[in-house]
Length: 158
Image (cartoon, rainbow, N blue to C red; front, top):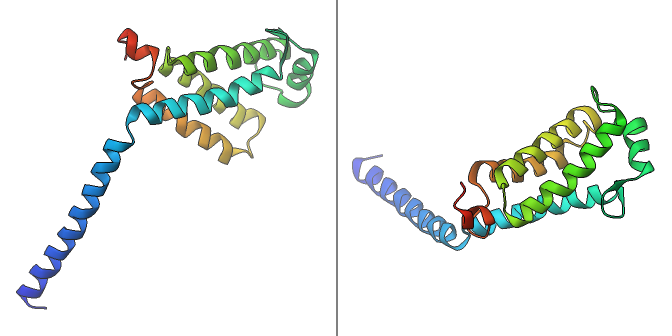
């Protein structure tokens, strides 16, 4: 190839890259962090809140099936099944509500991320694809926060 051909090829490449970057810049403007954070907060909250509802009767009375589940299937190490059932039921109610409100978003997401790690490692190690998708949402929230549509933002909390 001669110099002219190389220069033309480089220019064409830069033209393609520039066009692609302009599209990416527009998408950055259209899909703001606030929308992504609100979607992630709602998705994670729904997963855990619905799971928590299966462990209680009424408002927050841990049911017998939750105790049985932790005793016979989950078998979380280091915690008695009764304590694990209570901790899981309360965490699966508290942190999702905080996430929906966008209050203590980073702490709530980090707490549920820890819970997901326990589930992955000790309870359902074969469900890594599901847990990885949850973890990706929670890692985003831990790193970036609750976004513009959150009480964290209203309160000026990063």
